[in-house]
Amino acid sequence: MDQYLTEEQQVELLKRLWKEYGLAVLTGVVLAVMIVFGWRFYQTYRTEQRQQASMIYEHMMVSLINHQYDEANNQAKILRSHFHRTPYGTIAALTTAKIAVDRGDLMMAVRMLRWASTHGQGDALRQTARIRLARIYLDQKKPNQALNILETVDDEAFMPLIDETKGDVYLQLGSTLQARMAYDRALTALPDTALNRPLLEMKLADLPAEDNQKN
Image (tube, one colour):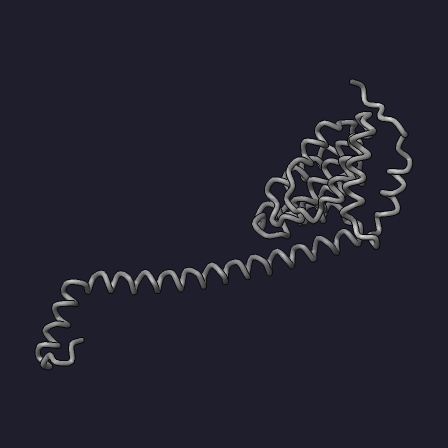
């Protein structure tokens, strides 16, 4: 404020500024307060959600260890329904799919993995769901569906495993050349210390010398 104004002039200027801009200033302050408290409430809510989801997840894992699969499925259902915005919901879907595979219920496994690949929280978890779903399609002799699900890449770190799975799919389709190319890409991307490298090298070595793909 101008230092040459008299005290009375400064007071009058403040009154005029408040009269003209007071409501806008007050509105801005209220909005700022609402944003701050709203953000804190949201953070608190998310923390509580994660804590509840963590407890249910622990219950689910204990049920699995004790072979109480029905109870584990119930806990997984709660996580998927009420905590689907947390990674625990996605992990629950993957767990349910694993139980379903062990029980021979591939329809349930496919449903859970499709849900996880679409609605899952976290790129790595969605990619894991896609690869597992592709392998189930392979077991069901549905190579084209397996290839289709592998086209979406959520996490580039999984490319070696994606290419290896594609190699298995191409082999089932009878395309040795494409299988070889996929296995080669996977091997190139894998570090020398990777645990699955020997198996992948074996797959590549076992391929026929010529492409059996029908033109």
